[in-house]
Image (cartoon, rainbow, N blue to C red; front, side, top):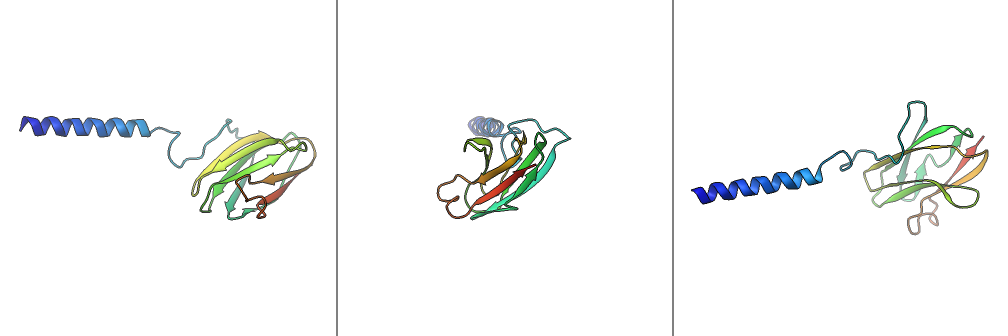
Amino acid sequence: MLYRSTMAAAVLVTTLLALAACGGPSSGGAPTSATSVSSGAKSIVVSATEFKFDPPDQTFKAGEKVKISLTNKGAVIHTWILLGADGKEIIKLKADPGKTDAKEFTAPAAGSYQIVCDEAGHKESGMVGKATVQ
């Protein structure tokens, strides 16, 4: 009887420790954020599926705080990347299927910018958009 009680307690403690290691606010399906989100940001929600963004195009004001939320409604990983005129990333969001990623950034200078998904073959399959900054 003592052996069973000891084994049951050991299993319970191991299970609780494993659950504690997996828990916490950064795991699970909650949106992630690389930067803090202020209440004054323009909020934009984008859905990603194979192989498109909805909506594909965005408009911002130069210097405006913008919060982008990317919800992946597809079956594979998708990214939402705003590229600068030099082709470098201004901001990148990445979401697993069924997940959301959200980040805040400051809109760049006025101009036209490309939005792409950089997963292999996605951009080439038409997963692109355009950002107009006024």
